[in-house]
Length: 113
Length: 114
Image (cartoon, rainbow over all chains, first blue to last red; front, side):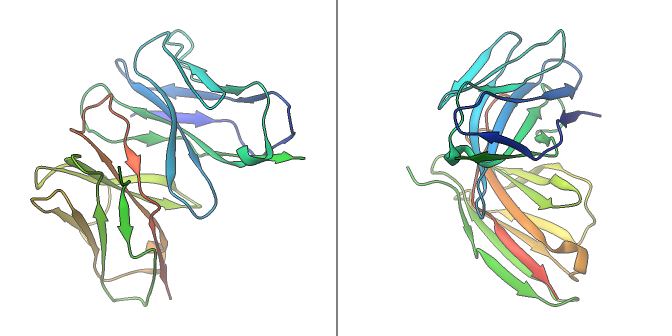
């Protein structure tokens, strides 16, 4: 079945550091890929998406590129802020079959001032 | 545009009871999905409704059920509650539930079983 693997956290960075959170997936066909962010006590917020190979999703300084050849969708940000501290989830939506998101286990990011 | 609204935000129940959670999707969205989030299992899909019909179902026991009304609002019911049902239950909506459409989540209902 479909699966998403994320790097283990927590990831601790200083403000203005470069962020990479790795995400790889297993799925048949051409899934759509998403990054969601969850702040304490809240639900999931869509951060960015990509629906086909080589698409780059971007939002609020975060970027991720859909790499079909490496089945990856790594999240990057050039300069993190304390306000970016949250849990980040990589997710896929299949191209056929059951309409359901498959999530990675989440990566907690802690940004220190 | 108002987001996805879930009520109540918090619930405390005891084993054996039943509970009903409510979700109002974004206006115009017809697909509503439910997910369970726990520290041990992460985010797991429960079911999806579209036009008042359950279109997809995850691997949960029959104690978990849901329905959708003609205005797209959805409810989820859990009967004979067990300690392991303690979780954050998240509702998500999308316009048509197409595969490449992102789902928009509410803030969830946190259910605690004593």
